[in-house]
Image 1 (cartoon, helix red, strand yellow):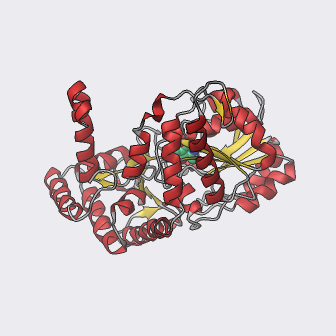
Image 2 (cartoon, helix red, strand yellow):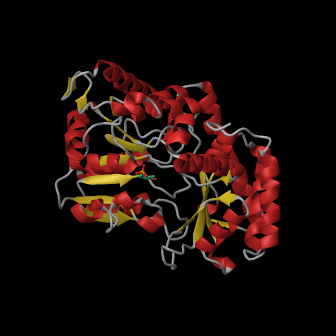
Image 3 (cartoon, protein in one colour):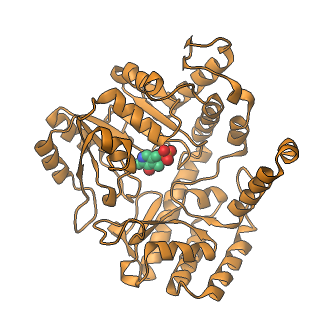
Length: 413
Ligand SMILES: *Cc1c(COP(=O)(O)O)cnc(C)c1O
């Protein structure tokens, strides 16, 4: 980074500081990961200079023969990895992918059904503060009051009641497997289209450790930087019948020129995700989550749905006399970074949260295995035992630093 250091030492130093932070904490935000050095190099390349509005072979600017190949490669790798008819690699993020899909499939005011926010749904699934909730008439289904599992019976009943044109499955804080086949049956019953938002689980789907929505959902959206471990961005997969509409929904519908440097990074990520090494990685992510869940339950924690099938755990800490925010702040002092989160039927304000969300994608990229999960559970238990015990939090962070010294940080060192 010598050019950057010369031109702008403040930003260069901020990047060094962030490299140091990322390599010295136990990174447990369920939506984060460590992109590889190869991905980072692609994203930091001169492809950022190119304007290429349009699609390969049909651009509005000249000089695109090189980036056309980059986008074609990314597209064919995505189709191959997921087994989809079509892939659009241009969405700048998961939220942009959803907005483009809505534009392609709906008219303003149309009814759409998604998972309720405190059941684990995402802001872009109809929150009143998001464009989705302002432009479309969102109705929601919930998880079951007792089991906290997605209730497909009530999804069907609600669908019949409200007749949405589009049903969205997928979540940002749901620790269990989705039944995409069943959701498609429900959509078919009322003549709705099914959209699967697999932003969180796309890496697990790619590695076949979570069932695929391909063949069930006509349109699939995702981010590319969560379990997929690529650059920050989005992707849309769809059936051939939806190809033209989806492409128009992205450009010119909701975006201008694509970020070709990021699309190159996505291509690299898709190549990496199509390896045995990545499959083993994704299996380990789930194994680590399951083991961590078992240890935390043994330690007396209350896990939403009683465990996990995927990469994340939701701890309901309302019985501990602290808020999710206080818990997450104490954990950060102890060297464990996560986020506070609402739990199903939460009686606390969203800004406090009755729970915390923990994920294993990043620590598994770092190299932590099943045998380390009892250590992690022990650190969490000790930190949350007394969130005001600064000395103990410090001791924990030192223990974490000692363990992490044994592991290189992907993309950093
Ligand atoms: C993270 C997430 C998104 C948004 O992705 P961004 O890249 O942050 O815009 C959309 N949907 C779900 C379910 C998510 O978890």
